[in-house]
Amino acid sequence: MAQQDRAIRTRRVILEAAASVFDEQGYDRATIAEVLERAGVTKGALYFHFASKEQLALAVLEEQVVDIAVEPQKIKLQEFVDAGQVLAYRLRRDPIQRGAARLAVEQGSNHLDRKQSMISWTRFVEGLLNEARARGEILESIVVRDTAELFVGAFAGLQMMSHAMTNQADLSHRLTVFFQHTLPSIAVPAVLAKLNLDPERGEKLEAALQRKMSVAAEAGESVAVG
Image (cartoon, rainbow, N blue to C red; front, side, top):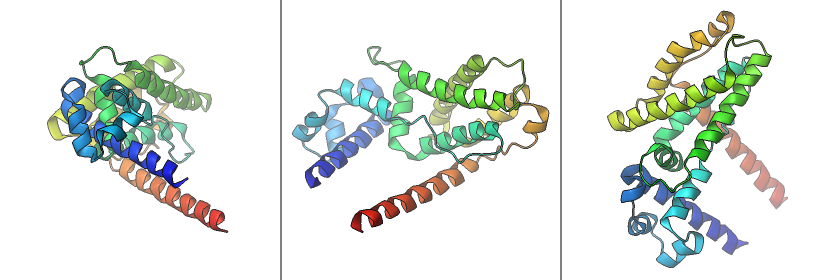
């Protein structure tokens, strides 16, 4: 069990190192040598988990979390906003999210299957919007699939611009501006007036989520010991 845990930790260290290199250099300029130096592992350890740079990149893309577990809200459209702001916050802090985001949108190596993360994120957003429609929160004229794809495409563009301008520091603000301009054409007016678009909300929600996960982990350890 200890050996298995060590292997899991080593794999995670390699993935985070690779994601950081992909985020900074892009796929084509990234090298295995730089990943090894960043991760502080041997070549054998890396190749035990990943046979090539391509496999590393695909693993980073697969590791990207798009099913954002935000706290349930009375207004489903608020969960849609919250999920976007949590992801925007993570793109400032989480190496996996940052590396995967660059891999998904850059125009480098075309043999990477980069569309899967876009498809997954679109499905997630579409699910939230369909639930919002079922609750009568969005206008009947809205085509949910088109709206979900618009959001995902716009978000990708926002994060690229934010990366270039401020290294993602202003992404939450840019996303709030996007919501301010687009939600009036999506949400029922009575719902729109109740939405919280605070750009700092993502950080607060992520902190609450991490506390919740920490408590759950401690509870799990206590049960195991008992």
